[in-house]
Image (tube, rainbow, N blue to C red; front, side, top):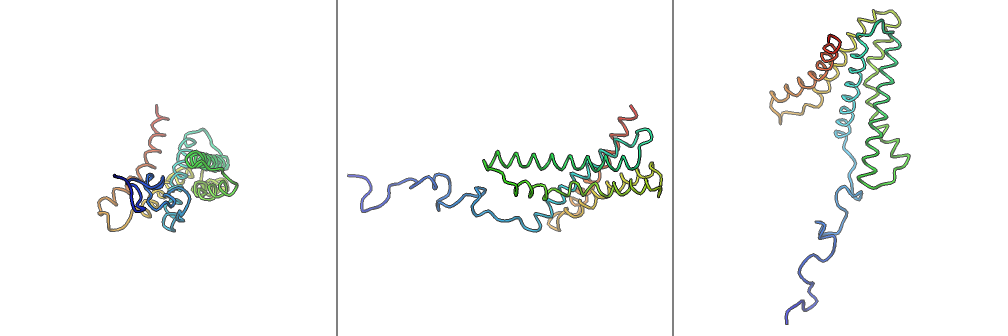
Length: 200
């Protein structure tokens, strides 16, 4: 006769856990059990990524108003901040929808508050430009100058984020320089595209 004898288990996976690729029967990565908190470095990278998001949104808003006839300085500051808030809320909502759908979780107020708090840098990215236009509204300099200064500040912000996330010596100097140049070129491209549209 053949078959299991002496109390030995039959061949094959003993339970569903092994079939799922988890011989120990413990929680799988991403299932919620045993998940690790993001490190400080990961949180910083996420903050900077959202800051880039906000900076690009701010550049788009500024570029769209640059060629308007007599745009008010304070009105422009308001448009920049409100636009960033709208992007912030949209980003947080999309992340919450994705989390709820993929993880099949019931979202709580803490989840919503955490997502909004975690992506706040989208709004903070609009603050430098808003300050520039508030100063223009106080007649520190002309509104036309404020648009130029705000665009330069936005492009420089992308350069700073590029330097902060470029990585260490494990990457070649050429790749690091190319990465930072790519970040800067995104901001410059936005300004040039708006200029091209208004020249058509």
